[in-house]
Length: 343
Image 1: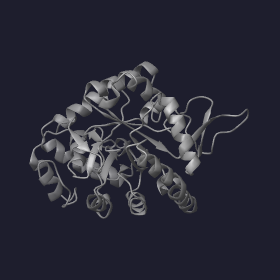
Image 2: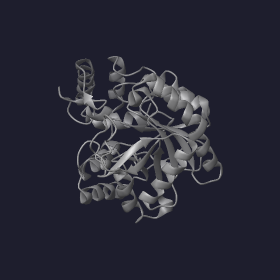
Image 3: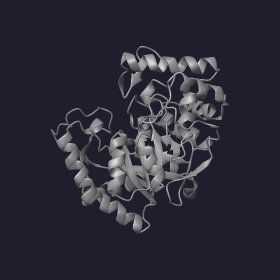
Image 4: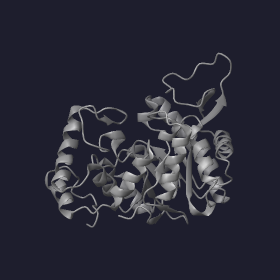
């Protein structure tokens, strides 16, 4: 596969590269990355032909956007697609103010987030993003983290869904109509909530993280067919299921940002065994598989080092025998209806 091949985002005029770049790690999500290394990672992505860059105010509470802006301001603005998200507004911590319960200690010192999916909150969030990025145009804006996996409480989930559709969505729709932004969507960890949003509004794309991968294809039941019917695109985040598909499968492998259950490890090892029989690295199969679905316009793995960017590019360019996909389906490890490269 060509990682630099362009694919249209929904029915918009925007075109994303098949390989994009996810900005959560540059915010400090999984490790502390020094500034110089963060810029080297972004440089490697650009040099490798990546032209879709996805970030969020939540990634490091502004740190990821600041780093993206520093790198991208040096590039021709008409040569890349920039995506960010709404839902959390940052503020300078007041003296003695405690961070929200359960918040990861990965943010910029002195800045704290609060949820805000209202009309005014979205406008404020985007204004802050423009200032952190130092860029006057954001191409794709996504409603972020309104799913049970992120929220935890069904009642809170319902309240945020209603607020977003009554307020935040209206703001995004207006900005798209005015030509301020090119595409709108949601960035979620749940295919069911992606489908619910898609049915409730007029969206161009959805960023689905971790729910359509070499390990699980539940999104094929309803969400992906609906996208195909409506002409919506899917940006695929979390193609390695937060780690278990990124390298040799170990007992300590992570899945959904926690230690993988034994049954998940066992299935991943069976997939890995098929890949080995066909002399194919597991992450190469993981990246190429998701891009075979016709509604997927880009896959956006993050990276902790320049070498990971280079490895992802190599994985996509690596030839994979058709027999690998046949064997995965024959052994019940892949949905029989799942599109596969070359198939």
